[in-house]
Image: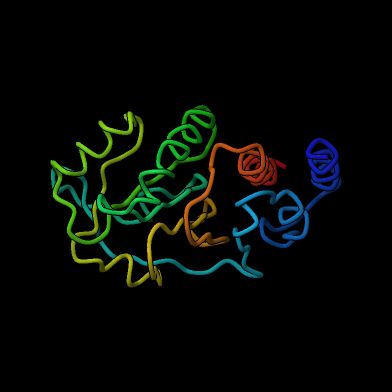
Length: 187
């Protein structure tokens, strides 16, 4: 079934799909399991310009990641669903390491850097960034209510989809969705 859905999507792309979000029906058809929670927007949404930080206090904004698709995950060290989900985000990053896809993880709220490092060490994640939003400014600007929340940004830095709660980001469904987005950009 997954193969058929993928074949239909790639055929549609080959015949000139226009905007990244214009054909959300094809992307939505790829959603299975807990990826059914992923909601595509009818139009891309402007994102926040709020500054957030890495573990050494270097400043970043979402604009720093323009040019690639971004799977932006908001999490916290105390969040049990985040602990469950984070390894699948790590696997997603590994899968797309040679593609224009970045998994960007931002700990929001009070998350001391040593606790963040311990969190990643305990779950054996070493390929995701330790970024933080200590005063929850970015999370508030992005309408994050509850954790985890994952937002997909297009290469222009606009939000095109959102998933509330944890998900299996290394599932066949999630990978097919991201591959389809990357394929649309390349067409």
